[in-house]
Amino acid sequence: MPRTVHIIGAGLAGLSAAVRLIERGVRVQVHEATAQAGGRCRSYHDLTIGMTIDNGNHLLLSGNRAALSYLGAIGARHHLIGPGSATLPFIDLANGKRWTLRANDGLLPWWILDSKRRVPGTSPLSYLSLLSLLRAKSGATVGETMTCQGTLYDRLIEPFLLAALNVEPPQGSAALASAVVVETLFSGGRNYHPLIARDGLSTAFVEPGVEFINGHGGSVSFGRQLRAVSFDGDRASALDFGDDTIALGPADAAVLAVPPWTASALLPGITVPTAFRAIVNAHFKIEPAAALPPITGAIGGTVEWLFAFPGRLSVTISAADRLIEVPREELAAKIWREVAQIAGIADALPPWQIVRERRATFAATPEQDARRPGAATAWANVALAGDWTATGLPATIEGAIRSGQRAAQIATDQD
Image (cartoon, rainbow, N blue to C red; front, side, top):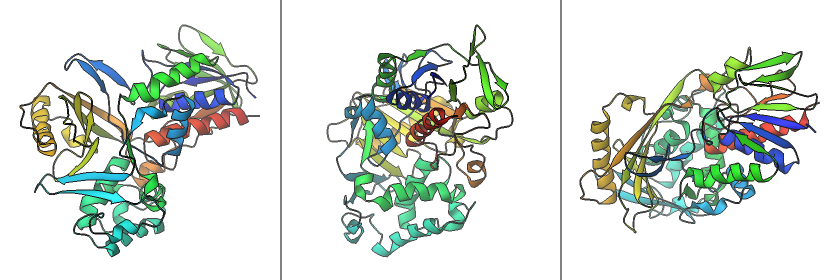
């Protein structure tokens, strides 16, 4: 077993790697380049609207086993809330029609036989179209694998896959879409209860993780940007942080839980994704009505998912490159009109904030998926972690945490 594993990056991949290593009795040191942990999954106090918001809204599902095991380990599972069943309301913003998807928990999906539970305008046979994803050819897109049109596609498959892949579904990887569908829709309703971090991402995922690490003999240091890695044969020999250099002993290891562009600069010759997609999040300071569901899906407009948190309403828009250059005021007003329609609000535009992430995730196309490296590297004591690595899933919280746990396994299995 290594004496110390140095984890570069305190996002969810790095934190989950550290927690798993500590559970295995390994000493860890986490080095984060910025002033805060969490990476793209964190909360911060926004001065514009005068409250704490998340830098991105994230939906989890009850079948996200790695994410839930991580939260269980750090004592934070109670921070996730949801309806307690596979229930999800939708609205078509183009015509105002509303419906609620209500799946049963069991493996046999009898809910599709009930017109009051399934997507309106669909028949039980239409759901068989999802089976085509199980037969997807290697390197195929979703559009090459299944028909991307029709009521079921418009009202369920497209919004579901758009959120998971963060690319327009027809261009997305059929293999990644299949993986998501297999772990959710094909695994019984008990695996797709929607869950959100009611009190913020940092409260649920980040702060308890850092506290767990610091409280179990590890350390998390900030302002520690890794500048270079030195190598001796098939092993990394030193980590250069600019102000100091850490020599790696014979039993030490490193986990690089950094963005792909950083990893490719530090590790010569590795292949990483090179195309990315944006996500736009909007936050509005207003108290949601008590009857408003925690999550509402929307089609037929710009808003895709509306989240109701204490004191604010938040929106997520995936594959949002088209919105990056839209003036902020124009975008906020447009989104608010749709939010007001969804939530039944007559109020004028409240205090707001727009958060645009230009490189939120790698583009989940077959070409970019093929560029994702595994956790193991050419150096025996170096592992990679991050939702952009070959997790078998798109870039999600679940994928990020799985990658960290896999990297921890590799770090402790080194010769």
